[in-house]
Image 1 (cartoon, helix red, strand yellow):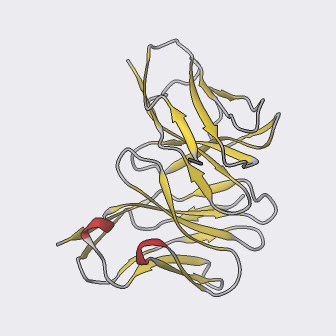
Image 2: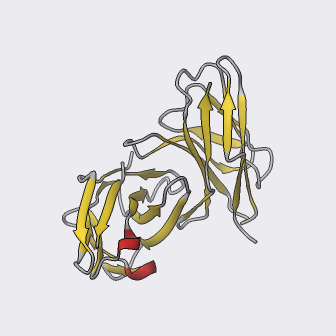
Image 3: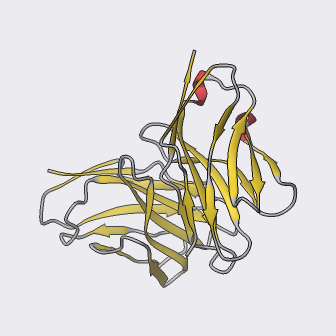
Length: 110
Length: 114
């Protein structure tokens, strides 16, 4: 099946730890995105990548890092510098039209 | 940078009545506009898009949207609402010159009551 796979679905992090969220796509899309969703705030763009080995900061990049070593993969690391990381994280990919989304990862700080 | 506004946090309609979910946008040049739907704890599902052509766009599940350039709006509509349409709806815009930077509105929660 073609699509976007995010893992894990649920993730728990202790304060001060870095965690990495996985996003893989087999749609052959050039562009990939990470969004953060908080209740009542819609989707906010963290990072996006238009091509391998290149990425740009979105509106809320502080405390996050990404890499794009392969076209299929765009992992997001939530670092200890992110003071309020508890949220629902969505990965997406696209060509020039609509974006396709993964099922999300819910990150909770414990 | 492009942006989207969804002026209503919540829309309530009775089953069988028409529904409208509002969206206005701001972008330099021609916009690419999209509507998505989200069910609880799930990713977003694509409903429809406007790029060029007819101002009335038809999409999945009987939804349609009307593009109005003079009002910079892209309202989502459905002639007869179903209880199963209850969900969170997002409008999104992508600009012409940076067409890989997609921005979303805050979302509108649609509740259809039987």
